[in-house]
Image (cartoon, rainbow, N blue to C red):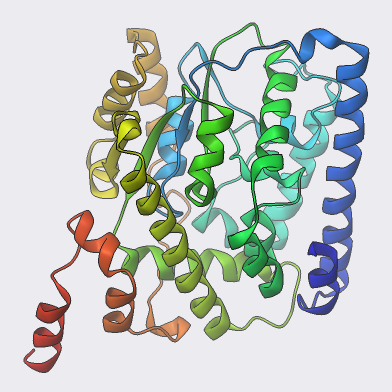
Length: 364
């Protein structure tokens, strides 16, 4: 499905075809190598992933800064970008000076930032920074990573209704691969696409803890659409802002509804969830981190707090420039989107009831 959509829908340019081919090929090679690693060393498969912490808020809600700040804790485990690109043989927790895998990913990072100078303004990616679960799940080819990087609407529609069970089998398999030579620790993980499959997540990790970050969808959607536009510009010369806007709005409305449905259906798991507002992350991220550590039952040592403050000081918001965006540039209307996201906005205090919205529209 993915390859068919890439070939027939994505309108890839020459560079885009090379990148897409290499990405698909790389995931397939990694799968084979991981199978061989775990056949040769059965102890990898016996690793236990205990009480992982997942950040699952939609994109552009402060998930990345929280994720990477939490990963600064001494005993935190998070998959680093270079490890996910080259998970075989099982990588050490920190790369050696001459680890060719790390150097290759670092070179790719430099290339990417040179080709897309706007990328760091909307999303910073670095070889040594923690990377989200879309790359782990990419090894089963069921992830939003592809639908954000490429215009593949048929694949995205299929993804919404696909069973994610096998993706979480590979997710756990890769965590064991990365954990084997880590010296132990507690996993901190992040991906907005977990909202699509919280049932499978809890089946795979029954002791998981969840942090759900929140922001008004009227701000989320244009910000994500802007990121999508930047990422797709690397692989295609045919960027359709109106399509990006429509697809982003519809997809994340469905994802948020699914997350809300799961919480409504499973009140027995409600204590596993911690809700965090984007505004609080912006105002005082370290206080939010302390709440998260308490929620997960993890201690925050003075040395951890010091490392986290240093990381936050080194990564201020808008470090690489202001990220400007609007609903209108993607063909979206604020009133229509408010109604589309009515349930979510009212649940988390971002919206008046629809009749008040209609009254406001009629009598500004």
